[in-house]
Every structure is written in structure tokens, then in C-alpha cells.
Amino acid sequence: KGTVSKIQWHDDGTCICGDQDRGFTLKLACGTTIASKAVVSAIGPGGIPAIPLQLKSQDSSRLATSGNGWCHSSALALPGFAFPPEHVACSSRHTTLLIIGGGLTSAQIADLALKHDHFNKVILLLRGHLKCKPFDVGNEWMGKYSNLHKMKFWQTEEPDERLEQLKSARCGGSITPPYARVLKKWEAAGRLEVRTLSEIDHCEWDAEAKVNRVTIVTTADKVLAAGDNQRKETVIGRQALDVDYIVTATGALLGFTDLPFLQEFSKQNPISVYGGLPLLNEDLQWRKDVPLFAIGAASALQIGPAAFN
Image (cartoon, rainbow, N blue to C red):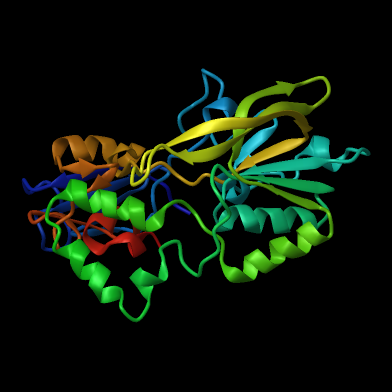
């Protein structure tokens, strides 16, 4: 249960790792210091939650995972975090949960909230359409002919072009077929409403009534011209709602070198970053002379779109 607060690389003989004179020291939040000759980072996309601006007050901490009437999905895993919140658990009225996000996490939270009767109704809000597939990337990256796409990716040497391929291949979150069936079950029961092409335009917490006053905007995509891949959004609906609680299942920001424990390290050992992803070498190493390795999302510029999974 240790949390790394700082990592330092020593190549001047000041770090003793057995018979090594080069290595890392990792300082933990509890005050403990660990020495190691190599470090592997396997922390996923990062620790900075991606939160819609409408939910964050101007003085909110960048790392905040909850606020009045809302929380980020990562908060649900924190020790002692109450879900549902007390004002919902003690409520005698019909309660509604609003979930923002179209990935697997949003489906799991919806099922959790309804299965245990934490809320009477759940509204699932998606900026795009609900996508159902076994992986966040398409079968063309995972199936029989996946090597064709992988080779195209690996033969692309420019990091900017690789980043565009990553974005195109993933195209937002998706829900697996088993959870798609779960959502259909709750929709049929009248307890789940899925709203696509919709997002929060305004949100205000009413402390006295203990509800979120929310305005939801629904849009329609229109192609500008034949063969033009540029799209514009046209507002086709606007609705005011009162919801008792909001969970934003919007993942984490891609900003590997912005993570608190890596900020000083990355300044002392600079590395190129594209779209928040570090440009590791082919061994997934920070630099040849610095044995910090990264897997998972941080390795996507080398591994490809499936690195996130």
C-alpha cells in the first residue's frame, strides 16, 4: 500500500543498489525510501482524472476525484469512499444517477447502482454513440489479419503520425458484448436511459435540496461536404434535469510525465512526449542510459493501440 511521491536517478555513485553505483531511489509517501537498479512503471494511463469542466469549481485541485454531488469513477476504489453518498442512501424520494462516459467502466457502474438498488434510475450520457466490441480497438487490430495494421503502425517512424493512428484505432471507449446485454436488460426494465450525442452544458449543485441542477445538450453530427471528414455539431435539443448524483467515468488524462512523482525526474532526464505519451525506445525504456521501463498505456507509441488494454 505504498504510494511513490518521488523518483530519482543517480549515475554519480550516490545510489547503492547491492554492488551497483548507479540506480534509483524511490521515496514513498509514508517516508520510506527504496533503492533499485531498475524500475518498471505499470500504472495505466496515469493518475490525473479527466473531469468535465462543468463539474469542477475554479479552485478544485487538479487531482481532485470528487466534489459536491459528483465523483470521478476512480474515487469508487478509494478506501472509505461512500457510494452511494449519504444524502442518497438516506433519501426517501425517487433517486437518479447520471453517469458520463461511454466505456466499459460506465456500464459496470450503471449495473452496480441498479443491481444493489443504490438508485431508482440511471441516465447514461455519451458524447457519441454507444459502441459494442470485445476490445477498445477494432477486430482489425486483434483478429486474423491484425499484423497488416500493426506492420503499418510500426513502419511509421514519425511519432505524430503514430499518435494519429492511435486515436483513429481507438475512437473513444466501448462496451463489451456481455455488458451490452446487461444494459439492454436494465433498459427493458425501465430503469436505465441511454442518451447518445449528449453532454452536460451546465451543472450547479443545490446544497439545500441536495441535487444537481443539470442542463443537457443533444447534438446531431453533419458532414460538411462529400468526401470531407470534417464534422460540425448542431444542437437539436436542450433539457434541464435534477439528478441526485453524478459519476464521471471519463478515464484519465494522458500526461505520463505530468504525474507528480515523475515531474522532477522528467525535467532532469528529458524525453520527447506526444499527446501525453512518452517516446520510449524499442525496449520500452526511458533512455538507453536510464533503466526506467514503462508498459501499458505509456508504451502505446511503440506497442500500438492495444497497449492501453
